Length: 489
Image (cartoon, rainbow, N blue to C red; front, side, top):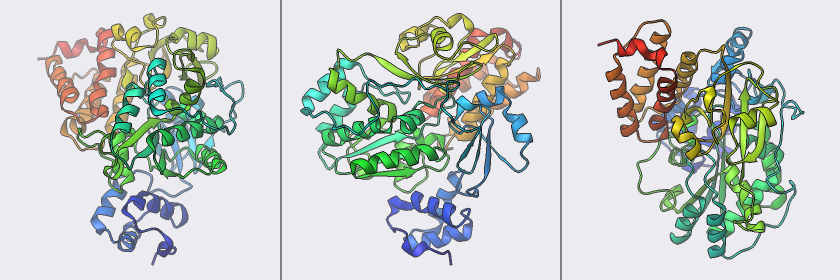
């Protein structure tokens, strides 16, 4: 008998929370503990077992040592750090790219986050971090101000915020508000900075969203590695007395995709849903659901106070890699990579070889693109986009092929396995790049192109659709590296 199970809620929507409770209070979720929880919640044992198998952290002890070997950490010594800690678990990202190479010992971040002048921050978001009454406007006025501001989703998709809010408002209630705080894109740390350093700004944005949607309940889906953010955001929510529940993830990047997040919250594996219907029409438990990224909501109070047209257009940029002061910086939406590196992050520490402008799926650009505005329009000629604004700076000493291969390894490990183009394609591309690093072309160029197109057109969600982007960027800007593929028939 697993102690304490009798006190846990039995609703299916609490399955992930219950599994997390077992891990934190009893131990790693073994088959026996999984079955005991299934019996308690009156869920088939096989269904709970498949959920446990989906989330990488549930089977690990709460004090496990995790070492990041994602691209930035790999570049700055992550594998050497892993070798120095026998028994540590290798993970592709832990959301602390500003501290690379980084690791977690349980909830403890190593090296410790100090927020000194060496690691930012430069975050204002046009207001102090203190409890305030949210702006009170009529729904139509809110939509108009959001449209005038040009605010888009800052999680990576870039969808116009006013359109999403308008769609939710038009759908019949009851409605739900969900904050997507499952920031898992390598190189992206801005939401963590908001929740740790400006949590009241997010809380104020949540209040506005709940009032607008006439929602009686709201949720924050928070990535598991963000223990400090969970503590500080929880305190800010408690200070306002809001009916907001924090749901803690369990180590799945794909749950940052909004429909996969909904599946996870409803007690299933975090696999993306086919759309339509969209969450604004039928989201959490079939209800119209307003889903926004942390940073997006944090901008809204200032927009409503100052007016959409008058509010300065800034966003938060995560800067990591070969720079003197990695961290999170608030800057204009059309800032250049050179400006971020030199004016905010203290300059490059080595000759720059490549830059990832907005997270793993945003592409890879050469040093020649450092003066391009980091907007969709400015980066389009370079085959890239701003994504989640996770700017990663790689030195010329770090091989581009290794960068692309490590990026593809991340996608392969984080694929939910639901659709064939992504499940097989990411592994195949990782293999192709590994072989190419050793001068062994694994397939001809025409066949590689077929794989890329199949992934772009056949994958269900943005993971499989976006995985080819960095590879295409590397092939475009460093064609000599891929010449062996063109010579293979």
